[in-house]
Image (cartoon, rainbow over all chains, first blue to last red; front, side, top):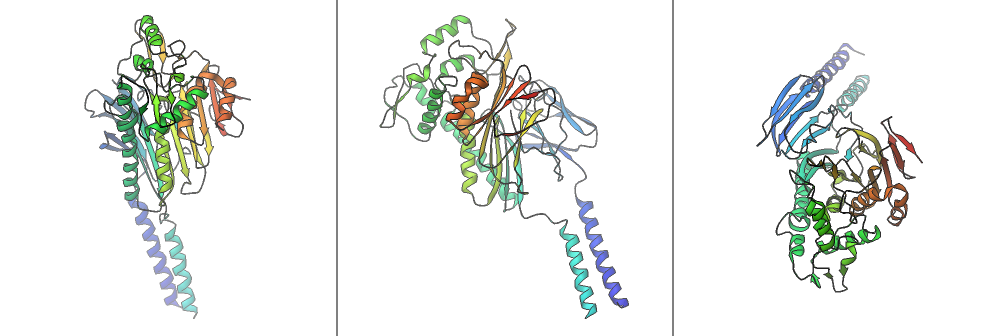
Length: 121
Length: 350
């Protein structure tokens, strides 16, 4: 191979490497937590950052906590308390729902680590 | 020549490297919403853009809400079922489609189940009203009165479908398709997914009723988690591996219940039409798998009440399979179901 060929090979490899780097960097970092009330997104956060968040529901109260990569509804004054009794979630596509207050907490990411496609309960 | 060969090789290598990051042509969209008094989740896979899938999902949910509001919800004043329930004279009433077919199927299942699920005991279910914000147990006198007035025990026998498409019932019969409604909803969504050639796969869950259609993007089977009846909401007892075309429903004593403040007693929504109270059973939950939503939904209630042994005939009749979980943490699984237990506090028995 001539010197020019080496340049060409090197050049294309560098372009390929940079493209991959750009694609990786622009991808969202890790898992996101999305909170909606009656279909409208009210909050987005990273699952890797601990926080407590009071969800702005129309009437009543729902409070969630992100801790060590898990989300849990820690407080709710809805009559059925199903959201508060929901296990802490961490996997892609998992949700905690408060039906009376129309709240959905959802975990989203590009990686698929949840072997379940749905739940029957 | 050598130079060209080198160029071609490197270009191909680069394309290969880059294509590793490219998205596959199958797109997916998943959304959680509220309809039929419960949480709904629809995931669609298809060869169109994600935006298009979102549009389709919104339309599917709209149709489910229409079924609820216009047809089968007794809570909605001018739904077809409310109008039917409100009639004074229920002699040879003309009922339009689609309600007529849904009533026919529901009442056929009620008959086959000898009333262990019964779509015509609305008078009793409305007296309890488990879905109200603050449910209270009715007094023993009230229950006694309702059982008598509504002819509740064996109520399904009061409903007759005439050949000309009309219905005749006793005057106090009130329909409540609560035990069938989510099944009706997933049947409709399934039918619409199937008709749409751009949808290659999908899963719809209306509360505890789930339908799986087609294939996922990776062509693998669907995995549906079964709720642990003694665990937290969302806690998995095990998972069911299913091919597209299956309908799954679960009934459990943990779904809709309350503890009465006066008596301290716990009541749940599956009622025994002979006593007027919650079914007395060792079963904690019953999951049905079959080829129709309305059947899986109806049978999950009936088989919950019947228990694993007495359910066999009914399951056979509808070519359905079941998973029963009892209070002693025993799990009974029908042959032919691919169920993987994940909670080691439970035991599968045969």
